[in-house]
Structure formats: structure tokens, C-alpha cells
Length: 112
Length: 113
Image 1: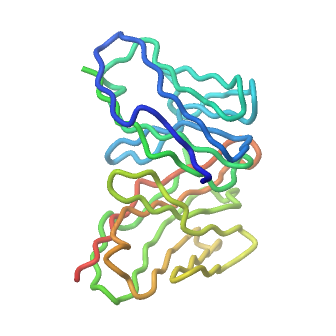
Image 2: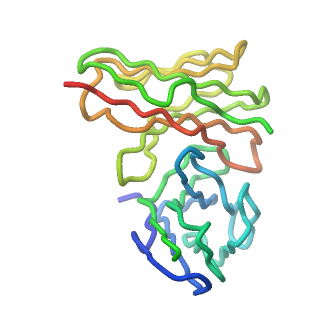
């Protein structure tokens, strides 16, 4: 089944403790992206990747890192999480940029 | 900056009626638009898309209309069902070839039985 898989589904952590949210897609998509979703603010792009080893900042990149060593994986790294990074995170992929995105099921992150 | 917006945050309709969800966009350079549906606890799900060289596109029970003159996008759902209850997002592609989509804040559709 074609899908975007992200883990974990739920995560509670404390300020400053590094964490990684994994994302994997099995559709051989070139383009991958991370979004955060907050009430009243909609979906905002954090980082995106046009292809392997090519990443770039989205609208709200501060406090996040990403890597794209393999085509299928696009992990989101929070080196030192802060409470304002409490949010619902979505990984998404598409065949090419600006095409329809396929989304994962989301990761609800709470930073205490 | 330019952004995608929605006219109504919540729309309540009776089961069996047609629903119309509206969206205004401000970036005249956008050439691709998508509607997504997001059910509670799930990720956004693609519904239908349209390119700027089209005015209308139909899917199964859904129709998207694009009015480039007034920068307006709408999603029509025929014979709305309880399973259509969700938040609907429109999204635009303002920077083709470089970035992905810019999303509006969403409209909640509530279907009354």
C-alpha cells in the first residue's frame, strides 16, 4: 500500500531533550516536506527536500533540522525542543514539488 | 505576504444537501490548487485539484471551480453525507518548481442528520 509513515504517533518530552520524528514513504517520491499544524494557523511548512541531499527551509524552520540521506526517509530533528514546538506534525511527499502531497497520519508532540 | 484564506470557518448542512466551501487566494502567480479533507485524528487527504488553465473540474460527488478573475476557489460536494464531516483546506502552489503548497486555515463542515 502506498503510504507515508511517520513515527511516533504521540510523543511527550521535556524542554531540551533531543528528539527525532521519523518519516518514510514507499512511493519513490522525490519531494518530501514537514509541516506543523496549530489551531488557527493551519499547516505551515517547516522544511522541504527536493531530492536526496537537497533540503531547504520552509516558512517556520527555526528550532528544527532535517536530513535526506535516502530517497525514502526524511527525519525531523529537534535538537533542543521548547514548549512552543508543541504541535501536530505532518510529513508529506509528492512525486515532484508543487504536485499533490500525500500526508502521513501525524505526530502529536508535547514539550513540557 | 500573500496567503490563501477561507471565507467561513464553520459550515453546517443537512444530510443530502449540497455543500459549497469557498476559498480566496491572493497570489495571482499561483497556477495549481488543491482541496484536502482532514478528519479528526488523521492527516489531510487529497480530494481534487485544478490547474489555472481550467475553470472547473469534477470528481466523484465533488466539483472544484476556479475563478481567476476574482481569485476565488470553491469546492462543491453533492448530496453531502455524514462521512463528509471534516475540516477542508484549500491550498495553492505559489512558487512552482521550488516549494510546495501554501494552505489556508481550513473550514469545518458539519453534516446534520
